[in-house]
Amino acid sequence: MAALQIMLLKVWVMWTGSSAVFTQQPTDLVVVAGHPVTLPCTIPGYHGMVLWLRDGMALGVNRDISVPLIQAHQDFLGEVKGVGQVFWVTPMQGKDQCKKQYKCISQCYPRYDIIGDHSKGEYHLLIQRTEIQDDAFFECQAIQAAIRSRPPPHFPPDDPVIVGAPVMSLRAGDHFNLTCHADNAKPAASIIWIRNGLVLSGAMYSKTLLRDGKRESTVSTLYLSPSNIESGQQITCRASNKAAPNGKDATVTIDIQRYPRYDIIGDHSKGEYHLLIQRTEIQDDAFFDSS
Image (cartoon, rainbow, N blue to C red):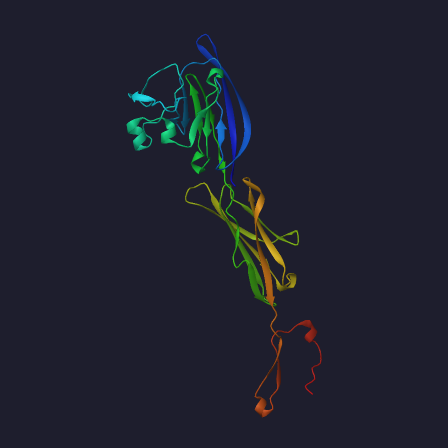
């Protein structure tokens, strides 16, 4: 699951004469990607127009989302009927069908909705399922008062993959390496290698920025020598980031093929019985008897 770490700024607007006085109270919030998040905008005692914008483009709906918002337009926001209520206006440079029909935003942006108690000045923007495109500046505007909120989505890596898993067969005595990749993470995943509960050192890492310019893929390669691995051992690749702090695991089992080191070669019909030592080891420092 992905997590979105969001800085939410609550706006309180109080009117004194013709000027607005507001305070801003930031709150850190972590939300799981694909789950809802609410961007709060509270304006007690205010009865003017309230707008939400995403990256400078107006969006949102009337509190009664069944009522079309705009009957005609003259400028960026159009001629809004019913001034004095709260409107969440569809941008005219938005989707074609919305641009032509001026539908409420729940039709143009089905993941967005407005919640809160209007009598208490609550005009919160609900994002029903957070996605990568929600990495934007959201602005709640109320005449002179406005506040911006940027929810930078954090996405967990895909399940890590170890090349050659689940079982990697090796020749005894051979050097080898393990490669693990964790894709589509924001921020990029960190990868560690674990054996018998201990973190292994010496791995090499590389990161690649994906086409969307937001997510990254991480590749880690672990080099091992035959002296520090045994057949049947399991090695785990663990990928983690802010969206997956506990990490995601992939495991490979090492299967070391111990081929016979000794062989008798030669033309037996001619009485040739030569001893071939295919791979010498320290214990071969000995006398061999051919009797």
